[in-house]
Length: 119
Image 1 (cartoon, rainbow, N blue to C red):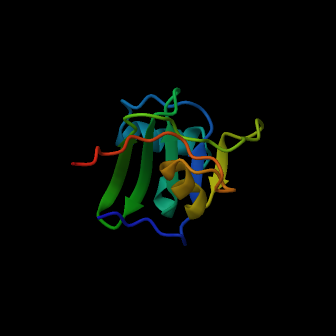
Image 2 (spheres, rainbow, N blue to C red; image 1 turned 90 degrees about the vertical axis):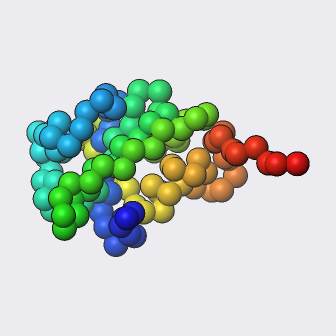
Image 3 (spheres, one colour; image 1 turned 60 degrees about the vertical axis):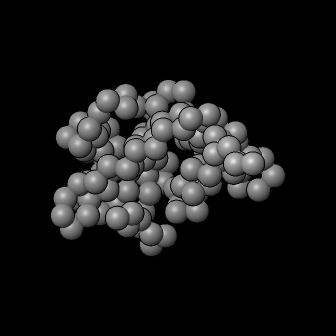
């Protein structure tokens, strides 16, 4: 069940991530490179180099959960990072804009795959 809400804190890792990484390696990145604790219940977002794949790491009551989204076309629009940190604190709304491919002003839409309509 997708249990991410707007009341949670979201942290976007600012460097490209190898999408072969899984629970323990991503948890280690949260601890060692982001300086955070995965057990705090926050949500951690990782993007690959071409910005076509996203992994979200989150601790739920049963254990760690990874959500993985791979775009068929287009890419994720990332925020501008402060180079002095390894993370960008994002909001629920910013995460949804990245997933949907919409800019904050609503004017620019990133290309996304759409199911062909049946005629």
